[in-house]
Length: 145
Image (tube, rainbow, N blue to C red; front, side, top):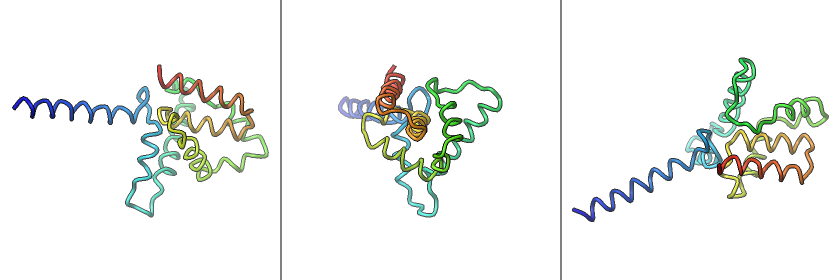
């Protein structure tokens, strides 16, 4: 009986840790993003739908002046990108590919999806490689606090 309880306790702890790794400070992170690949429905692009929904939520927060969960945002970069010649690159399918690339680095998986999106926007807006790396480090620090 004790062995059964021990195994049950270990299983519950393991399961709860697996659930927790999908969120960083209440926001879905790279682990959630990767899980969107595991769809059996080939007619639906879950990453595209997820990103579209997330951006609609961000528009709502701006419209109603709600405070975003992500303190390290990119509103100014989105405006800057919209005014630049690269504005046509802000296509959601292209952004999905960029976010996939961002999360290909295992250490980035703890960063919330909105942070990965902002990193990609800053990249398209022309932020230097040094500043991009500094921003990525800020995101990592935020995610690990």
